[in-house]
Length: 66
Image (cartoon, rainbow, N blue to C red; front, side, top):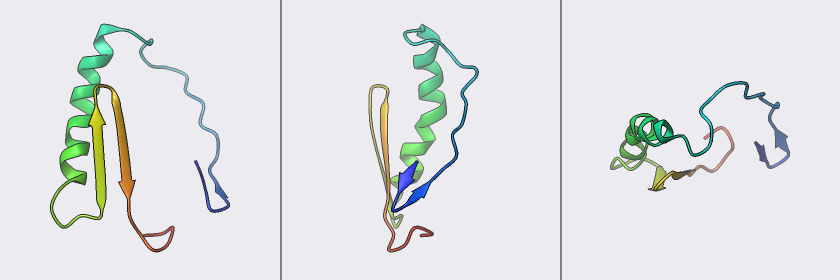
């Protein structure tokens, strides 16, 4: 993650499901369904957009800590 001069540490990904594995679709729905609902709740300053297997999460704040 890189944002306004902030650079996070690298994270090695050593496990997971292969691209195109049919199980990935089911796990994606289970894992991410709440993300969209919580972010788009009324009064929140976050927005989540999802389409097929892509999700964009936007958080609004005046500072990086927000």
